Amino acid sequence: MQLNQRINAFVALGGEMGKMAQKPELYADLFARTYGHNKWFDPSQIGFALQQWSEQLTQKSLEQWVAHYQSEFTGGKTIALVLAGNIPLVGFHDILSGLISGHKIVCKSSSKDPVLTQYVLEKLISIEPKFESYIQWANGPLKGFDGVIATGSNNSALHFEHYFKSYPHIIRKNRTSVAVLKGDESQEQLSALAQDIFRYFGLGCRNVSKLYVPRAFDFQPFFGAAYAYGHMMQHDKYMNNYDYNKAVYLMSQTALLDNEFLLLKEDTALVSPIAVVFYEYYDDLESLSAHLKTLEENIQCVVGNAPELCTVNFGQTQCPKLSDYADGVDTLAFMNSL
Figure 1: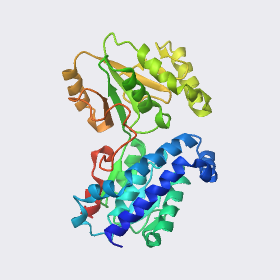
Figure 2: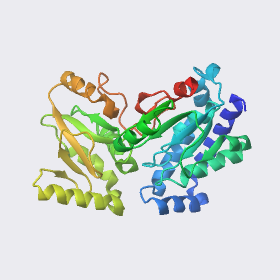
Figure 3: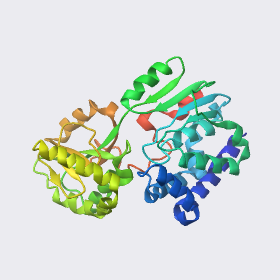
């Protein structure tokens, strides 16, 4: 299959994903099966993920993305993909990278997402039947591959490093995202920050789980912006986490800021529990920059309007471009190296 055929197929798939996002009633069974298997994948989160991918799978975006690499595409290899399942379609970029490079893929789906990603790939095959011989799902141990991309927790990464040590590989561990606030943010910017926190219930590595704020920072405007997400109180799994974490903190007499569905806790750690966001004070941006450099292997995005520190604007963490590679590792370059 030629590169232009692969690009055209993904452009058509993007159009289908847009239809799925904009007319969910036509795909009610898919949304229901996905949500029935994983209550974190509610229809609004599924629709958002589909819409974001639809906006990336355009002729212009795909051609610009591959332009630097296409003369190097040789294909012909088989890439094993161990997919995560923390948010809808989280492994789709790896799938796209493998197929657009001309390789075959063998996918190990997450137990948290056995429905949505497979449905999307079935749709791709219906658009371009030649892809059927390029896509395989593994139910047992992975076999017969030339390289691997595996995504999981820090603990599973240790297992992956050992299991795949003799193969070219990308092993991804836990990461999270942080926001740097200066105290002069507009209400619009704070509302966008709230989206970076609450989208996908905070389960993604691009979700903000930690705020860096100047001393004497006023949290009230932020809480005002966060109230737009009060509907989180209607989600049982989210609120179970909120209630549990609040009880644990109160029993240990931990000081909290609380708006009845989000807890803010002063803490030097990066990764906060669900329904909790940590915050830490800083004295000046220069020292904060030095501090963040020591943590860069654990941080996916630094959000804010301080250009000397921040890599992502407020509200854009869950809207990555095709060239925004997870952990900063260029997957297309990896594909071409095999």
